[in-house]
Length: 195
Image (cartoon, one colour):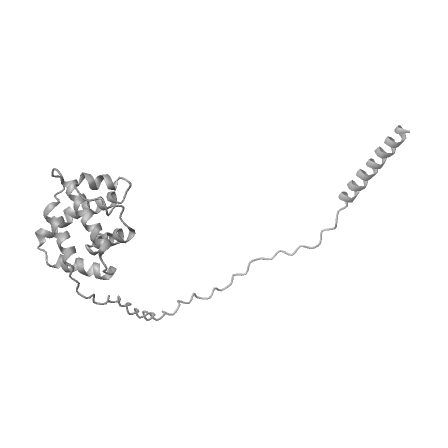
C-alpha cells in the first residue's frame, strides 16, 4: 500500500513539473517596438532671482530695569560695634593664641545675637554703618580676622562648644547657643559682604 501512495505522489510531482515547464516554454510574439529618439529641448534661461529687500532689524527691547532696593535706615548698634572693633584689634590669624581669641569674640557675637532685637535688615544696616566708618587698612585687618571668628561660632555651637568656651576663659551659661544667635551671626557675615 505504501508503494502505491509513493508512486502516485511521484507521478503527481512529475506532472506538476511538466506543466510548469510547458507554461514557461510558450513565447509571446514580439510586438513592434517603437524606438524613440531624443529630441533636443530648448532650455529656458535661468532667471536670476530678484534681490530681496534687506529686512528691517527688529528693535532691541528695552532692558528691564533692576529694581532698586529700598534705602535701609541707618542703624547704629554700639554693642555690635564694640564686638567688631574687638575682632579687628584682638584676632590676628597665624599668631599664638589667635584661635582662643577668635573663640572669645565668637562667644561675644553669639551672646549679642541672642539678646539683640534687630531685624535682619537692621543688622545688615548696622554692619554697613560700622564698615563705612573704617579705614581701608582696618577693613583689611577686620576681614582677615572675621573669618576665624565666624568658624569659631560654628565650633561653639557644636557638642564640643562648652569645652571650647572653658578653654577660652568664657562663661558657659549661655551654651548651647540658640538658632536666633546663630542666625544673627549669619546676618553679620552677610552684612560684611562675605556671603
